[in-house]
Image 1 (cartoon, rainbow, N blue to C red):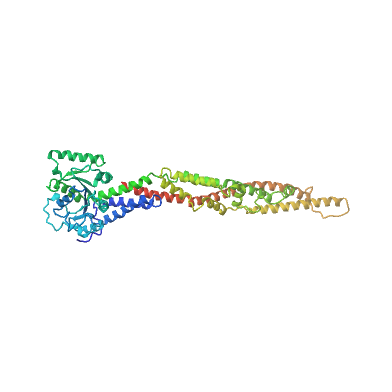
Image 2 (image 1 turned 180 degrees about the horizontal axis):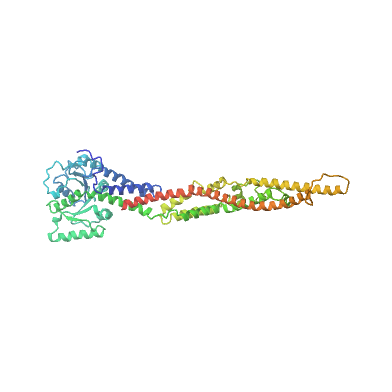
Length: 549
């Protein structure tokens, strides 16, 4: 025999791409679901994927047909009748029924299939060398026919071999005994569980010659009724007598039609893939994920901003800036007459530390920098929203992605607040100018007052003082005193208005910086992992859809 065809291009001509697409879909779904769905559920699909991939790369010129039946059903006789050879049951070729017997019509590529199925070389025979006198519509070129061990054998090895090869066959032909065609053993163990494989199933009622002619139609109808009750209403049922040849040509024509259409291998793989995908879908589901909407993202950001105490921090920054501006630009006399001191942050017990983290600690010390409960609730709400409608494995995966056990999102939010670039402590340059002017005004007022007092005392004595001149009738010293006493407070009032506006701007910049820092952390540590998990689910869902389509 020759080596198998290396390319899968001709394997399923016409619709091979559809089978490949389904298989690719199942493979991608299994890959995406790994770690989310139990390995025990994914394992059969992984094995199928490997087996189907191997089948796709082997000869597409052959269709694997397996004859399965109970002891005494005439399965081996039917095998001999189809091959026109006396092969089944010959001791030289088949020393034990624990191995299947295979006959291949047209050997090109068949050896690869037989080796793939694990059929020993001594249990293989080629039909190519034999003279085939069959009519055109009964020629079986491209057939690989398997005579499986009896399913009701008492030998465990027989059951194992049959169960193994049933999964490899492109077309299953169940051979029933006319006296035991309703036997529960084959129906309960094989036919009924494989109802989804009706497209690749044939039923042969063998030894029909043992049924009186007038009762044959009734017997065939009864078999069809039983199959319909088991979920296989469209499975063809053919009456055959392997020993006399009745109906054998009808069976050959059915097999030949399927071989020419090369539909059995495609249908079997399609059924296998769909069945495996359906099992996974029962656990993982296939509902559409809501995704992270703009509204959900805004809600998360707003909740985290509130949990981090940003509004309070911003308010404290504005208040602190106003106080520090007032101390720097206010009328010094009023400050000296007040409670004294020059620390603007005394009320918050901050000392000289005006960082956002210090403000957060001072405003909400019981929250340990970030209100943990609020932040965790916001993250949990987002995970619940985006996983709504998903099955438990994917809901749990989304929740774990949003708040993994090995990473504390709350601590990372706190770190973002501490690291935010917010220039709170630096005074505005004009504060220093105003402060100097105010100090000059105070000094000028004091000197002018002293000069006026000295000048008054001198007028009562003979002491002569320099004449500083006057502004109109008013002495210059008096003018300086009035200007200093009136100008300082007026400058303080104007500076206060400017300071309030500056404090609002600084608070606004701080608000934007803190929100940006928290938003970036939320994107990196919450949103991005959740979106990655949703992308993984989308890959899984798309794969399941392809496998089932």
